[in-house]
Image 1 (spheres, rainbow, N blue to C red):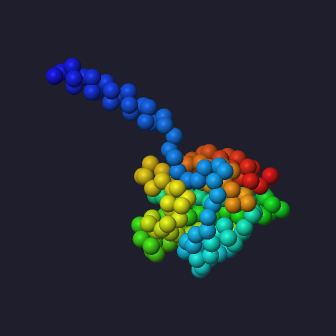
Image 2: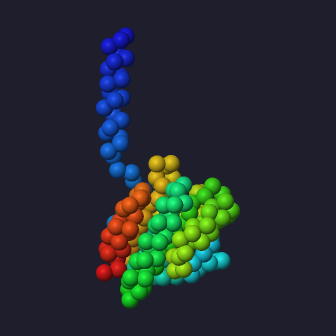
Length: 186
């Protein structure tokens, strides 16, 4: 009995590091196509509408950041980095959007959070929108809603994803966003 218990414990100890090293999958992969969807825009160039972001900006280089319970501080840092890249790449017409995924369809709680992110970050050209977790776009964009996935960043141009990252955070936010933008705006 003890040997079975010890063998099970040993297997569990080896499995935990293996799981910790496995990458988190979320979002469309490079080469896949983005599709139309209609979030509720709370700030930015599409504020007070449900316009489709990819449809509005068509073939232009675009960045979407899907937020799933990330800290406000990190989302503000992401928003500031997106705005800096929009300013830097004006000639390329780079567009950026943060989509905050919430529990309900109208997502009133996350709409308030989204407005606070817009105010704290001071962004003017980054669209900030909300969408419910059961919206078909969450599935279409393959967004992983597991609690371990705080954000999913997609860079695309001509409707085709060029780069995908998850859990962009901390001191690496600007560096990571810059690298992703370079894949579509250069």
